Length: 109
Picture 1: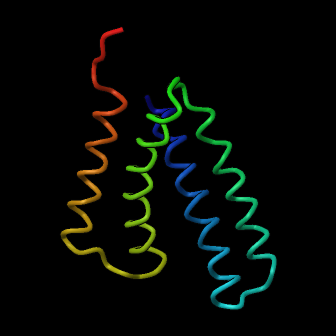
Picture 2: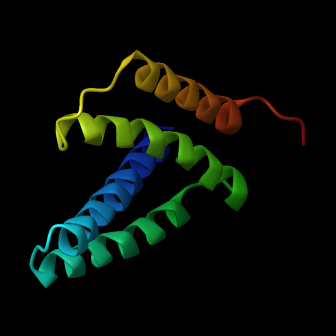
Picture 3: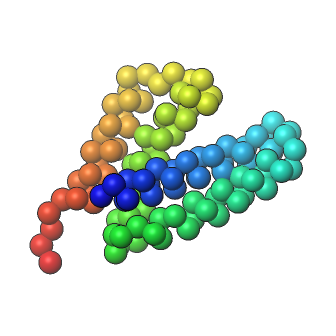
């Protein structure tokens, strides 16, 4: 389970970080290497979920979406300096509970 969580976190950081670098390049006129580094991070993001042990693509990506939401709230707080309000935090927690239900609920064969 620890490996799965680490892979979700790394994928989230690669996606958010890559998107952020592309954002800085295109929206804030940063040098092109920001966009190139962002593109490379997004490619890494595309690869990381394939390393998950979960056999179902849709379920894996849906669960990752919940992790992404929580990480995006944290990124906004730490990097963009936008303090999340109580509804951001509650929403992120709800998403993470959904992730746990989707991935680790007991299922029959």
